[in-house]
Image (cartoon, rainbow over all chains, first blue to last red; front, side, top):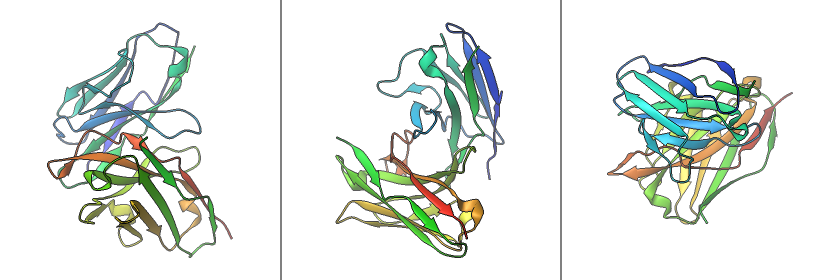
Length: 108
Length: 123
C-alpha cells in the first residue's frame, strides 16, 4: 500500500502569512493527489484535485503543486476562516486510496 | 441541489453489525463513484472503500477486507455500507463521498460529502 506523510503536523501563523504544507508519497503517484480542508464537526471539503487544480468556488489563495512523490499545498495569505485541518489524499490505479495524517492550522 | 443524505446515528454492541445508508439526489447516480471514509474521535480521515454505482464493483482497504460490504440500489439512488464484527475501535463518524467517474475510473476528488453518521460501539 502507498503511505502518505504530511508535514508539519500542526502550525501556527499570523493572518496574512504564507502557509505551506508538504505531503510525500511512498512511491510515484504521478499527479493523483487531492487536498481537503476539514473544520471541526464538519465534513471535509475538496480544495485541490489532481495536485494543482483548484476546485470550483474555492478561493484563489489556495494552491497546490508537485508530482511523483512530493507535493506542496499553499495558502498565500492566511485568513481567519482558514483555521482547519488539511489532509492530502492519494489514489492509485488499483482503486486504493489513502489520506495523509493531516496538518492542523491555527492563528498565532 | 446535489446532496448526499446519510442515515441516523447508531449504537451497537461489540460483535454486532451496522448498515449505514447514503441517499444521493440532484445528479446522475451512476456517473459518480461513492467512497466511504470514517473518522474516529480526535483522529484523522480513514478511507474504507469505494463502489461504482454503475456496475456495483467495489474496492476495499485491506484493513476492512472481510468485514465491510458496500452495495447500491440504483432504483433509489442509495448506497449502503455494512460493517460487521464491530469492536470499540470502530466508534467513529462514517461519511459517504462521491467522486466523478471519468472514462470509467474515478478522478477529480471527493467533491460532495454526506453529513456523516455517528456509529458508537459499546457494551
